[in-house]
Structure formats: structure tokens, C-alpha cells
Length: 551
Image 1: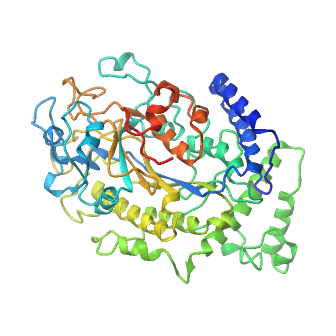
Image 2: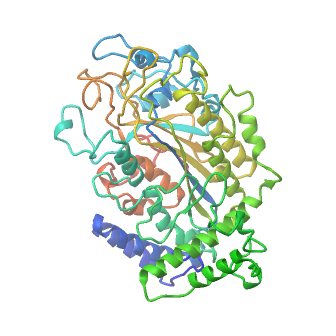
Image 3: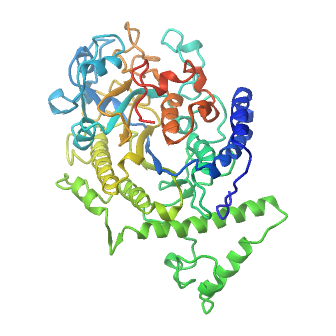
């Protein structure tokens, strides 16, 4: 997409309504690109009618490696707690050496009737707590600004049980990192990868809500290239940067200081340093980029490069809004969240720096020119096959313990940052991961970890979140063939998801602006999991209750 211009088709709104319904009815996977392209045109109709003016940002927090969510959201009381602790039997093994004592948990304040909605059996669940290092996120949950969605995972169809597992259609290469990452980020596990669901949402919303000429990309990654933001149509090219800021073209000095007088000024002859080789090269390069060419490939390359340079300039301007010497005006919130942290835990880590940058870009959002924005960040290190709970050395900074420590402090700091900007009600952050990990430990000593599994628990955080509760259905913590168990295969606790990635993601896409009637165009498998047609995922207090966002 060439971000130097925005097109505003002038077809009447009734055309949009007609094509939306006919397109949705006719679309197969092979027609997704054409359908989304049609929807972009139909969305463009709304520009002249004030289709979007309010700001909303969605932040995907990807926990890379497979977060052991069995030790993120943890039973505190009830029968489920006794199953968590275990009886040492074949079907009730418990977490073994990975178990965290109830007395150490960060207790969550919940309403019994709301917990009952997440109960898989009736009378099974009691109260819950978070990992001992998650006091910040506990406070957000208890304040009603954070919720959990239980047992989410990649599914190709509903109704999978242990009994029919072998004969059921299920995602290929289950328990494989690379495959499950791609399937989570595409939401279409039964087809070859072509695009991410974040990219398709951006394709749909960009022409309506991001109408300023010369705007930045709607999709910005602070964590490298990812599948989540890949566009289905090529219309929204993700802008990839690092936690250190914009990634400039090499060979022109830091922030182009060897090539231009003012890095914030783009494509102006008077700005190039023509007395330097770097300035002459950059001027020649950017002139070539702006030429049209008979080759579609060269034109596409030029468009991407122009868009990257333009976005780079706007991102630099956006970040300047919070610059304060060698620090930023938002650092105080992150420093406060990490005050008193254990040795080895500081605000200067890769993930926290990514979230700082997202907060700064939201602060400087006017420079980006978008009313809708999708960010992608990642926290790595969750492939915890060994020493998941350190018992020697720096026990608060290592293994899963250290990751929960960093995650909780950072999310609390991010919340405080966007609250200080007055946009808490405009931002939603959500977690995703390859998969959760096995309920049972893979060893019986302190070197134990957990292995690759399937459905796991995820958080959503922000002002629009109907927080303080657990959505979806919590799994029965029994393994193997025990009655009530949803252990998919073997006896290590690989939970069959009770909520699909499609359902979870559709609620997020709907909040960002995709109408319920068009969600099936973004999530082509969604209709397999929903009734009448989307009421069970968009309305609160229904089963399964996934009404975790104010829309």
C-alpha cells in the first residue's frame, strides 16, 4: 500500500450493505483476498460519512515459547485446588514439583456467580490466585481492568473429546512451536498460511478509520516480522521497528545525520547534505524510489520503501512527543512498577522497552495520523522444559518465575502510562502464545519443567475490559481417562481447548471496529463455533461467556 495517498471511493452505503452480505455468503478461503478487498472499498464509502474518528489501539502481547498458564492463573480453593495439588494417582497427579502453594498466590477477588459461569462441572471451581510474582496484574484484575479467558487454543472444529480425538479434525502439527505460532496468529489452522488475523483486521478497518493523507502504517511491530500482521491483500504493510526506536537505512549515519539536515523532513532537495557522499546517495536513491516503473515488482518495492521512509519519519515525530533528554516523560511509570524489584529484574529489558515504545507511540498518535492502530510485541523465554521454578541462585529472576515478574510489572506500568495519557478506555492489550504446557511436570526434582501442550489461559487488559472475572470454561485438572478429563492424549495434561482462537480473537476484532456481521470475513472458521450467529461470543452472561469487552 502506498501511504502517500488515501483513496475515498464514492459508492453509496447501500452498496456496502449489499456486497457485505453477498460476499460473506459466497466466500470460501480462496475468495478471502477478493472479499476483503471488496470490504476495503465498501469501508471507504464511509469515510465521507464520518465512519471513524475515535482512537482505538490493540496490542498483541505474544508470550513466545509457550507460556505455562497452569502456573499463571491458579486455583486457590475448591475441588479444582485439590486436583491442582494432586493425590499422586494416575489420573490425579497434580502439578508435582511445579505446584505453587496456595498461601503464596496473589489472591483474586471474584464473584461466585461469575466463577460459576466458568465452571466446567458445577461446584468444581472455588477462588483463584495469580503467580506469586504477579501482584501488579492482580491489582488490575481486582480493579476491574483485567480479565482472563480460560483454555483458549487452536481448533478446526468444536466437539473434540478424548474419546474422538484420534478421529477428529484437529490442527496439524499440534505441540509444534512453529506451526502453533503460525496457527494462533492466522486463526485458520486447517489451511496453508496466507495472512494473519491482525493483518486482515487492518485490511478491513484501515480505509474507514485511517483517512489522513500520508499516514503511518496501521500495523506496527516492535518485535520483528510476524505472521499476525501479514495482510491478506497487501494493502497494509506492517512497519517493523526495534525497541530502540526506528530502524533507519544503513549507510547514512545515525538517524540520517550524515545525509540530511533535518531527519524529520522527507523528500525535499534542500534538506539533503549534497556536500557529503551520504547525502548525494540518499537523494539519488529516494528519487529513484519515486519513479513509476513498468515492472510491477519494482513498483511494489518502491511503494514499500516510500511507505517505510514516510512511516519512519512519522514514528520519529511521534516518539519526540515524549522525549525528555536521555529519558521519556513516561519513564516514571515504568520505574515505579520496577521499584524494589529483586536482583536481576529491571525496567531495562527487551519486553519492557517494547511496551515503553508502544506507550510512547500512543502518546504521539497524532503524528501517526491513525484512529486505529495494531501493535505487536513479544516476551520470549517460555520454552521451560527445565528449571521452570528456580530453587537456587537468583530464584526471582530465572525460569517462569522471572518471566511472570517482568510481565506483571510491565503490564501494570503500561496501564499507568496510558492512563496518564487519558486513553485508558481506548487501548486493549491481550496475550497470545504458542500453546500452554503440560499440567504434569516432566521430572520429580527441582530441575523439572513442562512440555508442549494445547489450550491455555490468556489475559485481556484495558479500560474497555469487563474485568475481575474469568471467561470461557476452566479445564478439569484430571489427566488421562478420568471422568471429566479433557486431556487430549496420554496422561500429561494437554487440555483440549474449550474456546477457539477464532472466538477469542473475534471479540477483539469486533471491539476494534469490525461489525459482527463481517467477522466471518476475517475469521472464516468462526461460524463453526458460534450460534445465532455470534451471540454467544459477543454478549455477556451466555455460555460460553466471552463478553469480556465493552463494544
